[in-house]
Length: 116
Image (cartoon, rainbow, N blue to C red; front, top):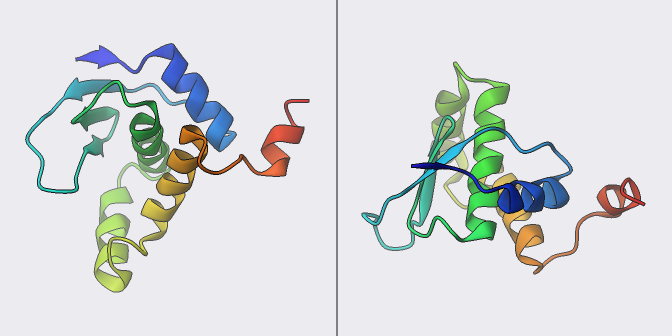
């Protein structure tokens, strides 16, 4: 287990406009098809702990968890049951950060202008 590397935290901040939360990452190869990571509070289990975009996705979940630590998973599961995994607003937000971190989608103007 290791702290999320500084360069991945910086990528998260650039992609999200938020300060990177404190988190640790642990290599975890035992996933179902299609799953590559999971955040359990500040613990990130990742199939590839060196994948910056994946860690940015999971760091977004850490931020979401820290916003509502006692109720996040209840809200997350209710949202998944209501609209499905792919339309879950928490997953949509995390995927957006992941895409921006990977360079597939540019950061919104508000994020890039604030750094000028």
